[in-house]
Image (cartoon, rainbow, N blue to C red):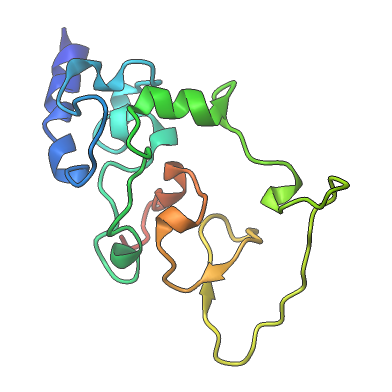
Length: 157
């Protein structure tokens, strides 16, 4: 009963966080989180208590607040449908060849690009990340999972 109570109280947080999104399921429904890996210890940190679904509270300070302004974390899907579409064995599936388009022979089309003085780029993820985007490009254009918006402990939101 305690876990159900936690889940019900968590569901009251969803409308303020995901209010702009039109889902095929009701975010206030007890079924909204069915099919996710609910972890009660992080229920108030991650959507449905599942770190793969990203933080419950999106960044609210510059520059990230503008990047997530029109963000739809699950593309209008319910969390379980989103995970069914984009994960395998509990982990996100990424396209082959680091996401590069392929030529007719199946080889990645790689183009070198020189950054000019004054060009500003940014990236999400670990310090070892190698994928850059034009600075302030909307999050939904970056092909990143919701979990990439997780802000490490001690950093600013």
